[in-house]
Image 1 (cartoon, rainbow, N blue to C red):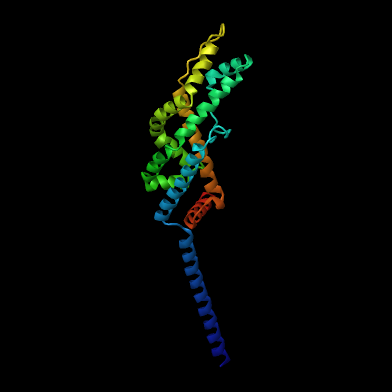
Image 2: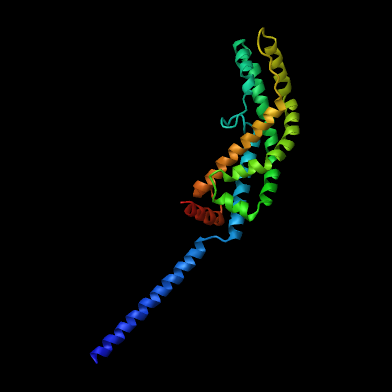
Length: 242
């Protein structure tokens, strides 16, 4: 009798343990499926993140002093024209130099907002593979993608706007005044810089610098992930990249 009771008890324990193991497996499987985003979720989350990053960047740079007060993107004299700046400042013409710097940054600020629809178009055209490569890529993978796919469009869009803005804020006049005055200095090597081309490129470079900052925030700071979907997908990406 005792033997039968012992066997029955052992069988009960076995069944309970087996049931617990099964429940654990099911629970683990459910947890894994909850934590692992689907391709659709990854696609939606990354595009949401990129719209957030590009939107914030373009709007911030479009504000007055968006370029001028941001030391990471502030447009200074072209490298080949540095001698112009130092020479004119030494001649007591620092205000002329400052007018050039302020005016070229104002032109870039005018143009910045025009980048927004270009980035939006690039985001819409991303393939699922592009999205996955960016999500699990380097911390600036999205910025690299934009640089590769939008630079030509940005240049074509920015150039005429920059040219118009340079004239509107008198940058062209200030620049001509500065270079003309410099070129009259005896024995200096004359400088002829394509101001529109230079400012256009620096304005675009500034955009990518700011987008890279926003991209990094979303990747590294949970507080920058504005939705539950972003938190899920970028939390998953963090684990996958470890």
